[in-house]
Length: 99
Image 1 (cartoon, rainbow, N blue to C red):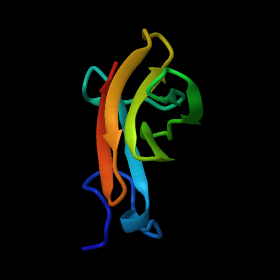
Image 2: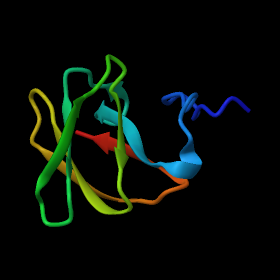
Image 3: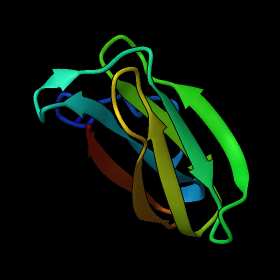
């Protein structure tokens, strides 16, 4: 096992036992990867914490503290999409965002 998620981002070099990882992919219509989108990480009070651009394949990753977070996805020609996710040390929260 190489530690990579099927079709997703490689976890090589990431010590998942010591990190709370939130990662996923942004898809248009459920099938087409969306590059040039931005995914924001908001804390449980809605405060901005971080933002990353999606890769050409629509992938993103955050290292977060434990707890409940909101992912706000901003993409061209799409309304913002919010997804609530729970991060925990020792696990990877995989999120597929459909716009």
